Length: 543
Image 1 (tube, one colour):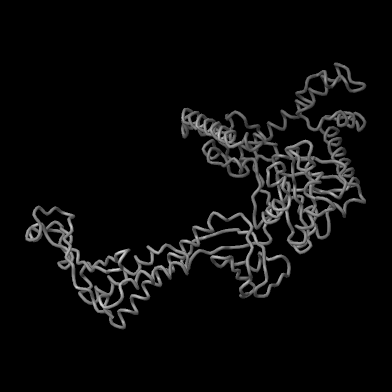
Image 2 (tube, rainbow, N blue to C red; image 1 turned 90 degrees about the vertical axis):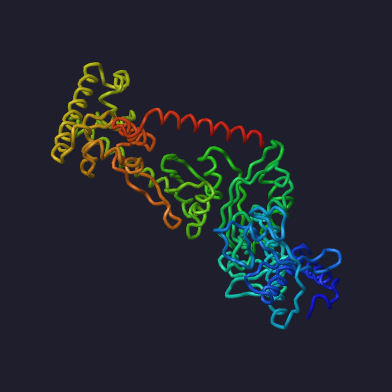
């Protein structure tokens, strides 16, 4: 097959037909044809030659050109595609390095093998262009809902025709035991679009919390318009879900708007999610109040929040315990996901027993250390005193409000507390010295003798050792392992040292040792402050 004998317009007509079918730019197909013809020409004239083909976009005429590039003498490697400045002077008036010498060569005869090779090049280029188009089309649609037709099922994964491409709904992204047959209509959430070797991969989901949020956005105009916002979603796909909403218009009830007239709006979402029961909850900035709402339909008697640990204790009436926990812990699990807090649920009886145990423990502490009778120790606990430090160093007026305590009694109480604490400090320091603690750590401000003893028992015996500690090693913290929050105990955690305090202590030690320059810290703080201000400004501008 020779290009010269073929109908030259046929090339352009073929390119346009392929481009229309694959919905890509005809120019890309023509470029693929040029490359395939150039490859065929190289097999005819020699692989080392630089043969280029140009197809006229109007007439379809293919022009074959041999290109030789002017290079420096020492860089000449390929005699077929390169030439020196001296050699180029035979053909060019003033050759410069980098100039190209172009000579038109006769069109090649495409044999059967060459034609097959050219066809493969064109097909490969067309596939690449098609993949690029598909990726560009879908990459910005991640995070939206798409409708498609089921093509087939492979090992539990559903292949979905989404118009100009194929997407995959993995087995673990399906709700419950959903099964689909070819040509079933399906609605999914585009979770991710990735460019991979075999082309763009579009990953779908029906279990993602965002899928429910997008469904509500489609059913509730107020959410679409931004009057109502979905703040959080927690799902047990196919079974139950909780969704927190807030209204920015005082005249619109967010829960009522999401439920709709006679439940029409929420029912449309429920039907799409295979009957998944949905609790719609008003969102609140106050974490305890929000949690009370999230645990509906259970009633809550009391909430105690520990912000440092990201943990919250909930007290419910005895008869409400099973309702608050839910079947297989479902209700409390979803409430925990919704609020992003660890939730401990206890009954009023359990909380009362714990409070009683704490009361008895503190009473015994004051009886043993201050040599008090049970009644007097109970009076101290009832007034809110929890440890010896509070008794020893509190303003005397706070002791005088206790019935039966005069100035002399208050002074005696504080003297006993201080004597006991000093003795404990002496013993702790003695023990720390026995363990080999250096003066550099003992003289460091901010650490009590008990803290120094605890550090020594953990192998931290000098200021250098202390300065190498991480803040979480001292204060403790929480890490997530396999989706579960796990507690990391800190060396100084029992002394109520917070993460911020631990950070300050470690940084002070590093400054004293000369490891850190305070000026650098000030610069970092200023940069962080400027960055925070910039983010605030951006947020305001966006709003």
